Length: 438
Image (cartoon, rainbow, N blue to C red; front, side):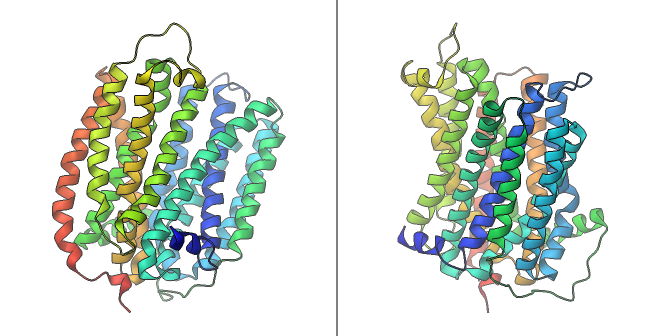
């Protein structure tokens, strides 16, 4: 724990940590505010269905990961990364100014354009922020650095959703306050980026291919040709499939099974986020400072067993005639504690699972192609998240199967996938990580 505290305040790590934190915070403040102004009709769109608009918004944010990730990886390998981050953060301020005009004029198309812009911003920032860690950290600090990154991201997502909702709730129709908030966070992200240490350029002679689709295919093929990297990327992306399957259903779980209020949704999302943060910290504490896979099987077992635990708890919830508030969750019987505990421990298991895999991805990626490997990871993540949404729609809407059975099926798939992954991955980890070789 002391090592993590020292790393968090170090000149090498703190600026990139804060830049990442403010970026994730702004993403979620803006997305939550946009979701609420659409859902509650603050910005009237009589000709459009609210559900359609919300799904369109989700698509617009994830679409850039498909289109631009590979190009973003090339740029991050070719140019000096601290300079790139500062440029990206300047662009974020411009995007938030566009969003503010959309809020103040009630122009939904401007808000959706800004949302797409934030997706592009995150797509180009993603390969840099993870590729830069092995350059600024020692080999025995990678686990700690990734644990802190995951914890910070989880807290940023949590605070962002809460802050975005609170601002809309308090300000009502006066959207100036959400404008001030998102612009201020973007400025803070830019200020923190100015303190990131200058990095060496890994492949300055690289020729950028601006054909997005060809580059994406080549990036994926490159990752497939390195077996250990390809397996790690699949392991990472499975986490996003699994996580999306649960997080997306929490509002419906709260409304349909718990008969809970909107604040109960926030409570469950808070527990899940705090669980990921705690799991990320404990992963480094228990698993050690060296890059290793020891905690991944523990996380995988937890992701399987705790899904059955949650499904059991859901099936035991009594019917309610009145809407449950947050306080009722703590006063209505032990079954609600089981719900809260299972979701919290699912987050802890996720932290155990994902932190080592991110550290392994960075450690085993060839230094000259590290950002492009992370770009390939982002492409796979986006594919798996879309697949998760399609599976959930098929199971819940088409086949009309109850949600707890979706969770059980996901758990079974997770068990088989993780057994396959670990059996294939473990023998390959005996080789020396490319990125750690001088």
